[in-house]
Length: 181
Image (cartoon, rainbow, N blue to C red):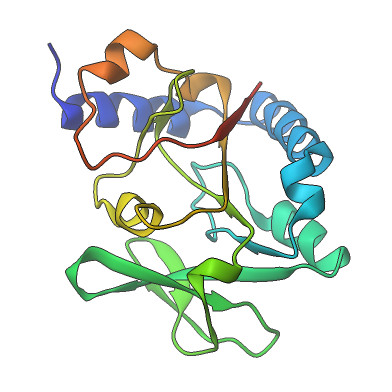
């Protein structure tokens, strides 16, 4: 059996090799599923990361949310592998951490007011479990998050339920809905 680190590296490699035009077509399908979902339509506030180049591009998600008047929360890491979400505004300052931009300052959004969390990951199974990037930030945050969670899964990120079952830890949190291409 491969280790969690080995499987994570395998899927990251697949994500990095997945380029346009296939990536573009897959992402567009995911955006349409997301924007048509009741979770999206009913959300006034969403939490979403600023994506790295290998992930599903979140810029169109943020743009659509702003167009619809939704509040957008961007994650900021904290000590002890914790995180919080900060309201995205035009004057929000960013710093690069873990190769991803995160807010330096800004207004923290209460966890209970985030209606929909778009949860990133490396691989996703049909049973709702995901393999994250290895820090455990989202699992810790989602442990007491009661609202909707959605992940967007490119076809190169799909992992079998059997394979992910061997990787699940007691603290791993299931995603309520995963959209696939």
